[in-house]
Image 1: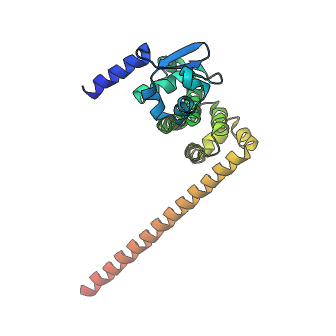
Image 2: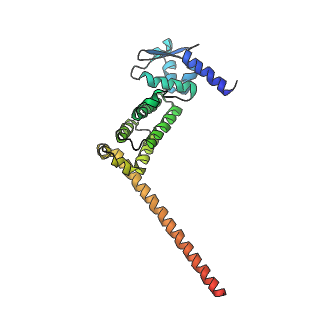
Length: 230
């Protein structure tokens, strides 16, 4: 059996719920899933079924605070190591696409699914790089920034890097300065990156100037030696 065959089997199990031994309840929907696939990938689900909670006996985990769409993406990742926003992503507002990825990111953090969090992080970063000119860009960036858990630095650093590298475009938006004013920690992070970028550029320019001076000196010495031999 090749990987594509295995993927087809897992996809079938995900959608059919056949041989399910575990139920994830969210909103008005019950997802029929499999412990052997879900629990090894999530400390949250593993603990719920092993540590003597009521879920242990019933094999039913209720997630009343989560939304159905996000949980469907999380469960899709367990089986396929990927999640897709589907056809609706093509017609959805780009801001809503970003917020969907953000909800997946936060769910992955909640459930301890590191690989899913990495995937959602990459997709949020792609969005941030691709939608700089959107008029509502600063507002979405603010939503992302304010939602990032305190202990997570990768996405926070990436967002401040992107905004600092495109600070003129960011401030060119009507709400750009307001977002910075209302979020001092974000403003400080961006300003630090701007300063670091300027220092890096200055160092590079100094190095280029030094290399140019050295090259000029060598050419001058070469000319002098040529004249001496004439």
